[in-house]
Picture (tube, each protein chain N blue to C red):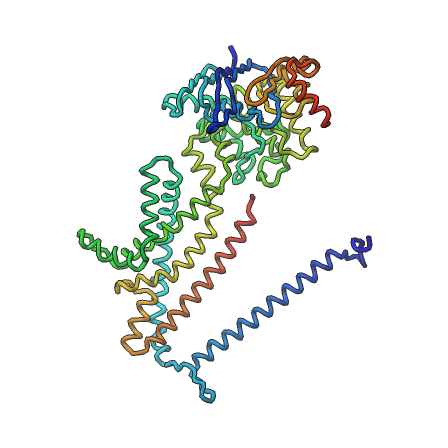
Length: 253
Length: 276
């Protein structure tokens, strides 16, 4: 059974049609990278999955939880399902969004404590395990303002993992980083992929997509143009738009 | 190249910084001296001295000596009014700000109605209103309580903008991160947004408190709150020395303002150094 299944998803901002009849599935333990130029709707698609953006129409299914949106007003039942979907999806943002008034460890245990009601003495070892996984145990008691961008993003990844989600959503996780800090974040993500974490990643890092992704999805103007294994997509893209996008990217590098 | 090279162990930038520091200190010294001169001039104006045809204001020293302690007792009352009022005003301001940000029409309306009504009428009038209207409902409050209600409601309305700005100053990403972690909108507000908004809000609330120190004197107009101004007017009128009495009151308000401005400046500095 697919862990994520998006079907007939449309998103309009006023008259702007940013997502057009999107269909996308992610299987357990799969790593799917969404690529495409900025403004193609990839981030909006990702944000529709955990309803940070409310779809205009369409069906979102995550781990068997189904929300079928046909009208703007959501029912209480749907709101409850959205809450459950958020519990089984972890999200990593481009701008990290760590809570600046909380120390690193408190950033990690905030949601387990308040949302899941996990006792403190259970939440802390769990948080420490994930902090160790991203290699930042030494920053346990620091405040986010004292961390580098790369460290912030690794903490943000650990924060999402501490909720033990079924699938991780990454929204351009390295786009706000200085070039020399991108590697450490990608390294952590690679490790997660190798451990079998299900990941849906919006990214501009083609090398990462090539190395780690099981499947690459190319989006343009709010639609999925084509998808396939990275080897096939990068060497022999079927659609001229994909080819043009990749060529321009290669030339830029 | 010569510019950036060190000269006898001290770089040029360090020299420039030192020079700027020296200039800044010199400026501060000049300011202090000027303040002292202005103070001296102010005292001179009230000294009763006469130079040729130029007369200064004559004050009755014995009256001041006799009644200054009585007026000083009002300081406690004034501070009491202000501390209680700023506390309730902050709560009202927070509620009004949340109402203003609400998507529920009646709550939004209630908030904007309250703010509009209070901001559209004079504070002195509001003080009289609470003092005169409540007894008609069979509620007779001590003048102090009516005064605190009036000040709290008035300042709450004005301060709601401060709280709204504070809440909106917390980035959208913070809210999204909390929601994505499964927190409810209420938890997000309480645990993530408000603690951060608090930091933005403290310095301007301090300013409001300082403004309130002076506005609280309007409460004395009801005649039932024995604050600084009430006491000054009472003894001044009774002894035909209103000017002396008012000057004592003015001195107290000024001193209180100076003290709380200093505290506020220090608080602001400390908050800005925090872990952003």
